[in-house]
Image 1: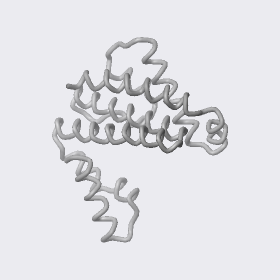
Image 2: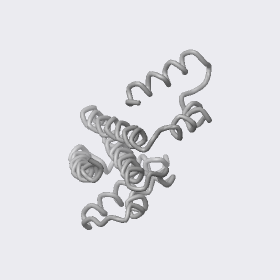
Image 3: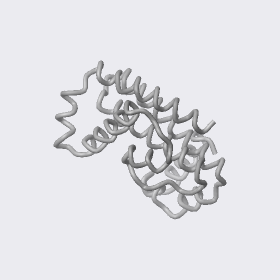
Length: 165
């Protein structure tokens, strides 16, 4: 199921029932839906969401929300790594947001530069989740730094995707 169809299912359910989207995502129905997919469908599912997150990062850059550029870059790479994990092992990926940890589970090698990108995105993801760090990050991340993160993310993203296709 493409992401747009999945979002349609969520919104339809959300509008018909008085529960939040997060409740739906955490619900038993969602888990059953994901588990009922075959390997190819699961990989496509994660790729669709990864693509959506990367496009969101680009939109955040355009709108000047630099902190969220980096946050969405981390999300895009995390989901790409999970798609690659499923593609390689045909099993559910580890539940982690640590990009280096997820990458190391793949058993493939990469450059120090790529590992630095993964570690940097993970650090910003964690710090972005806590209010006391969020305000500090907001002052450090300007347009130039956000563009650098996005460029490095796109390069890493493309390389990871080439490992699937």
